[in-house]
Every structure is written in structure tokens, then in C-alpha cells.
Image (tube, rainbow, N blue to C red; front, top):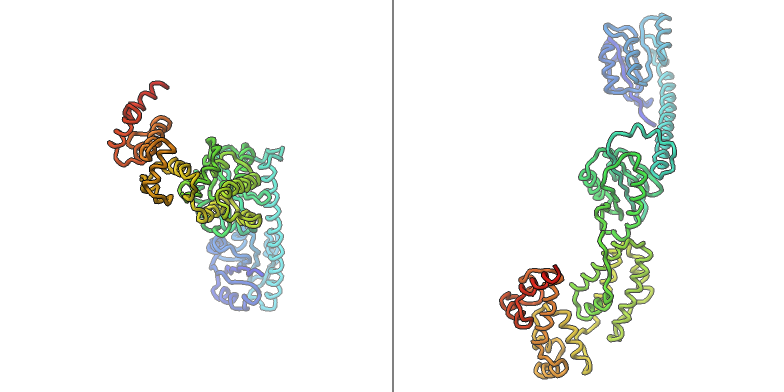
Length: 496
């Protein structure tokens, strides 16, 4: 039960002291918050202390008790007033009744008369507080329903929006994978900084008025630290708008909700942070992944998985389609790997199901699949070959790792062959000595980088495995017939 605050206003010190000690106020659910020696001070303390019950002397020098009560009521204070007077005059009682006084007590106050009165006042205050609470809750619910209907585009009569015409609005939402209690969410977000917040189903919409983007993002980051235990995401439309256009923005936010799975590692997903350019998976993507696994090239494997992440984000596929496709892709990878590596462990349906169930976002799913494939890579001897496919394996390796510090000795060691024997075998099958074949591959790659990616000569030199620019320059001119710069210029002219 709430404690009621009580204030005593009387110009006689003995009366004020007597009232504070005549009974144990705490025993009856009251707290004495102060006293005042006249009506002026009493009014000031009503404003600052906001008491529930005020005992006031009806006749005081300066501002009388009657005038103090009138002024307090005009200012909207709803405390209960009890008149104290040493005069048994019915006219005073009539005035106090007209002012809505609760009772009229003669001084000195009798304890037996006081206790029933304050018990009655307490019940009355509690009843009114409960009623006010219910009314406020109803009004809040009614307002919330109006906003919900409006934001969903269902409210036809929007005349009530006139009060919100001024200002620029921005709207965001916060979604969770596992829905927590709404009160828990409200406790983690600083709602004092919001203009309004509205729950629609399990999504909390956050409305800001005349608030810059940077301030809104700071609020999100602050709230995210408090909600670290829950997997959540803020979706945010950065452009400001008028109040009437908010339902359109809500529909755009709903599209961001659907991308929660694909952008699960993004705390604040705004419309400006979506992958907008087209992304396609190369036809040989699975083959390239298999090569990376066979030769345990984790860097390349990371790049291929970055590609597929961007691919799904750009195409904005739903989570169910993404999961289904990734299962099929993983099966295809293992099918291809198992043809040349019959002893590898192929994950069972139960293992795949566990990975999927444990992954709440695309990033978690890709990370788990990549870890699975990395474990498989440790089971594969990428350089193992037989007499029939040795040179094919070496060619495949050179095509993939041309930029590394390669020579015949390195290749012979990797593939467990005698250097001299391997050199002769390579020349016989390809028609080129190894070092020449490596140069040819590098020059073809260099031409591609000069033309298609328009890189500088020194950048190309590094990308194809030459640390010395002059050496690269001489090699390129020897094989191509012109310098790298001249080759680049001629191509630009031809396609100008």
C-alpha cells in the first residue's frame, strides 16, 4: 500500500508541532513531509512537495487558508484539504465545503477524532489513485491502438494527426530472434529519448521527431550494450518524412525485418547499408571451393564464402530458401570431394540438421559450414596423385597459386617427386619446361589485371608473384613483345 504524504500549515508553532506528534503517522500509512507557518509558504510547499493531504489553518495573517486552498485548486493540485480552526463558526464550515474541503476540525485536534478521519482519507485516496491509474492505462491503450491502426494503414480518419503536423519524423524498429517480454525491452531502451513507441505484434516501432541520424544511432548502440544477452537488430529508415507518410515507411521496415537472417551480424540495419549491387556466383564456384579445400587454402575459402554471403544479401532471399540451397551446395561439394578422396567423412543428415538448428543467422550458418569444410580439408592430401594425373594436379596447382614463390624444387617437394624426373615428365606432357610454363601463366594473369582491372604496373607485378618490378617488366616484354604500360595503352585506344 502506498504511503500518503501529509503537510501541516498553521501560524502557531505549538499547533504545528502538536500535529506532527499527536499520533504515529507512519502507523496509519502517512509520511509527514513538512510544515508551513503561513498560507504563502504553504502554497510553495504544495508546489514542491506535492502532498496528498494538507491540514490548513483557516485564519492566518497574509494569505488565509481559504485563499491558499483556492489558489492551489486553481493551479490544478488535487490534494485533500482538512480545515483547522479555533472558531466554531458555521460560515467557515460552509466556505470550506464549497471549496471541496474534506473535513472541518476544531483546534486543539482530538486524537480520537483525527484517526477515523485519516483512515477514511486514506481509503478515498487509494480508491481515486486506482481509478486514475485505470483511466490513464485506458487512455494509453486507446492512444496505442490509434497509432497501431495508423502505422499499419488501417485508420481511415486521420484528423487526429493535425497535432503532429510540424516536424520531421524518423521511424525505426527493433526485432528479436527469441522474443523477450515487452516490459524487458522497454526497460533496456531509453524511451525518454523517443517521441513515441508502439508495439505491433512482437515488433517495437520507435518514432523520433526532429532528431538527427547520429543521435538515433547512438541510442541504438547504447541500448544494444544493455541487450547484449538477446539476439536483436535495429532496422532504421534514415530519411526524414512527414507524419502522414509513416505507414509507407513501416512497410519498408517490414522488408528489412525479412532480411534479419541475411544481415544477422549487423546491429543497426538501415536502408542505406543494404548490398545494392548485383552479385552472382560463378559457375565454377563449387569447383573453386573444392580446390581450396584440397590445398588447404583458408584465405581463398574465406573469399568464396564472403562471395556467397554477398550473393544472398544482394538477392534478398528468405531464410528458408537460403538454408535449403546451402544444404544442397554443401552436399554437392562433398560429392565432388569424395570422388577423389574416398576416405573423407561426409556429414550425416543429423550433423547437418544440428548445424542448421544452431545457426540463427546467415553468418552463423556460413561460419559453421566453413568450419566443417576446413575440418574436411585436414583429411585430404591435396598433393596426392597417381602416375596418370600428376601433371594435371601440378597444372591445377599452378593455375591457383601462380602468385606464390614457386619453382620446380618447391613443386617436387610438395608432390613428393624427384626434381629431375618431374622436370622431364612435365616437359614431355606439356611441351614446356616448368619455369617457362609458370611465366606463361603469370603473363596471362598480368594481361588480365592490366586490361580488365586497370591496375598499375607495380600492382600487377606483385599480384602475379614478382617482387622486383624491373624483372617483371623484362619478362612481360619478352613474352608479350611490348612493355606492360604500352600493352595497357594499346588496349585503351582500341576500346576508346
